[in-house]
Structure formats: structure tokens, C-alpha cells
Length: 93
Image 1 (cartoon, rainbow, N blue to C red):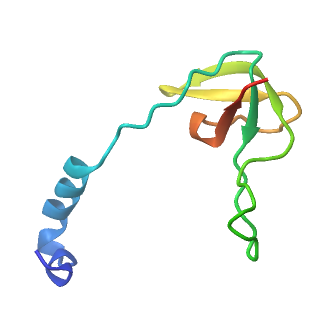
Image 2: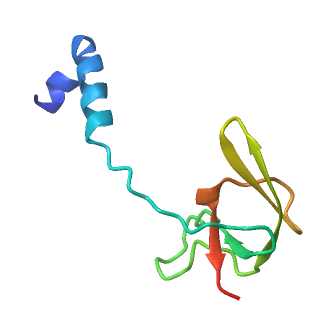
């Protein structure tokens, strides 16, 4: 199917199905426990270079892990809002 054909309304369901079937879902994250130290994902600023890290400089300690709607939310000391697992990086301390 060409990109032009894939954009048509009548092919939308078939395209969506094929994208979901071919999606790679092999991400493995190390387990994070209460008391571990983590860094937080920060979005790059407009003119930042590639060599600037996307992870925060300060380390945060995991205070509490809360499960809501089949997802784990991580509460960090000194951080306002709870975060999902893909937004934090486990740091060896």
C-alpha cells in the first residue's frame, strides 16, 4: 500500500491494525524500589546540543510507589508530581 492509499478513510482500519501488529514492544526496565535513587527525564530546550543529557542533574529518592489504573506512579522526594516508569532513570549509588 502506498502512503497516498494509506491516508484514505477506507484504509484507516487496516493501516492501524498493521501498525499495531508490527509494533516492537520489547522494552525492559530495571525494577525500581522504594529508597532507590533516580534521575528525571527533562525535555531538551530549543537550542540545546545533542551532547546535553536529557536526564536531570540532581538525583531524587523514591519515597512511594502507588498503583492506579494498572500503572505504577513513582513519588520522588523533592519533586512535585508523581512520574511513570519511562520518565525516570535508575542510578547506581
